[in-house]
Amino acid sequence: MITDEKPLSTVAGEKLAGHLRELGLPARLQTFRLGERSVAEALQDNAAAIGANVLMMGGFGHSRLRDFVLGGATEGVLADLKMPVLLSH
Image (cartoon, rainbow, N blue to C red; front, side, top):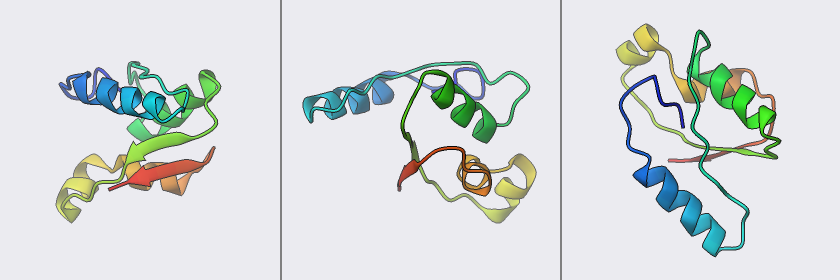
């Protein structure tokens, strides 16, 4: 979870990781800072840095204007895949 892009609570991420652990998956919430990277770069870079085998992320659609102005994390990750990605919408 990126902590400096927009204000988010880690509650949802902790709940998701907890549910995945209940299913027997070794999941844990990781938080990190965006820095000068795009969200897509930061997600994949940090997943690789902790040795993740797959990047799990929500795939959300936004208005075309918003994505044009701000970019889209989902589109950015899919445009430059560095590891397997599991999307949930």
